[in-house]
Image 1 (cartoon, rainbow, N blue to C red):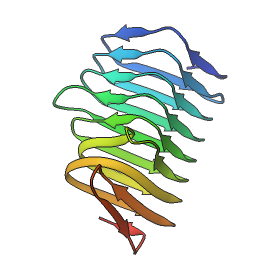
Image 2 (cartoon, one colour):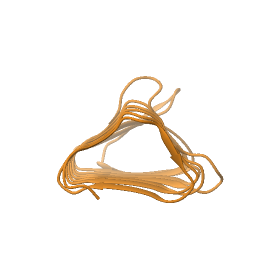
Image 3 (cartoon, rainbow, N blue to C red):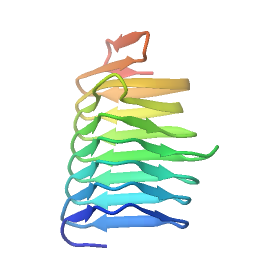
Image 4 (cartoon, rainbow, N blue to C red):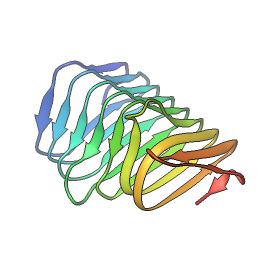
Length: 168
């Protein structure tokens, strides 16, 4: 637990649970984190994932009172594992977010993916937004999406726009 900014600049791996918390500062991940156990990153400000974040077994939890920017792959690698993202502000994804079981996003602001390679990949996904949702995804079993101002879900070949702002 840290009370200020937390910058991770050296790659590391661990076999157990990795929990990094910054109560009042930002967390900026600039080095690959590869762990065989669950990962939790929590901050009272913004969270930036600038390099790969991988959990070999378990879930990845990203929590921020501010915005979350995912600029590199975040993924679980085994048969079990979820990626849970909770932000008080926007969630902006410009890379891959992949989970073995579920990708769950809850944002106070907008949720978006940018670029052709950024997408959510999981058997199921749940997205709740206090703003708009505009994401690319590959979901086999189902997606639930709810937003205040609009929902756009797309894969590589199709695009869906839901008229009622609360789509399933």
